[in-house]
Image (cartoon, rainbow, N blue to C red; front, side):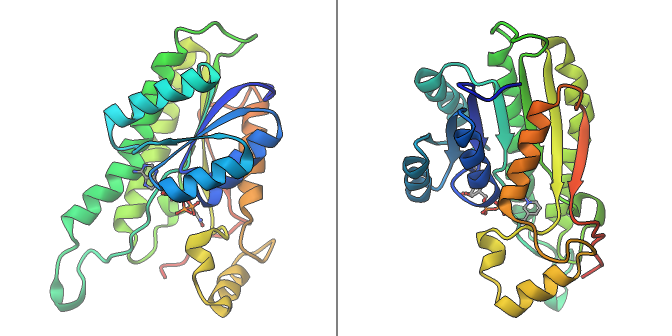
Length: 253
Ligand code: NAD
């Protein structure tokens, strides 16, 4: 699919991988709406890129519906959805003093990363179904998993299982949406230099980067965005999860 003048939604677009994606899609002529809960950062990022910000909580059905309606009023019906909204709390299954993992934290992680992804993609696809196809396709959905879906580390039970859910929905949703001519793929990033990782001390960042076989460094958000663009442009890519990780396999910790 060509990007020029195509309405696109990027969830989690106020920061990190989503922000880099919004930037790249906008630079290629897409009409981008950012969906995020961080209003201040989201609005200033959107203003800087010349795109639209919509205050949307991906876990909330009504909030997503309203965001899609506002996005449509601004740009027309979206044909591209990139789901980047996510949270990554760390907690062991049994912590200090033998305290069990907080169920609220577990639920919140699954709620944002997995249910939030499904909530946005299902409502996006339902609206897009009413639009005419552009050539052989109608639209593209790209979800963000993580290498943690496959190599979850100590303290990542909630995060890794939420991302494994994102991996698990890729093929069945691609099959469900095939009749609508909507493709679905997921990217499973290794460790990328986003605000979360930038807050670590420099030597910790370097040590993390050196664990990557090649290239021996952390990923750049622009490289994630480049993969998003590659998926959008290749009509044969469907139902697949792509690791973007410099060949790393994460150790237990
Ligand atoms: P980030 O924290 O910089 O950005 C995440 C964005 O999601 C934030 O702007 C946040 O406000 C938004 N968000 C959180 N909850 C939301 C909600 N309920 N509704 C709407 N927006 C919400 O993180 P990032 O590093 O850019 O990560 C982006 C995605 O990539 C996440 O899904 C993350 O799990 C995944 N990922 C990141 C890495 C990495 O190394 N950075 C690695 C693997 C996977």
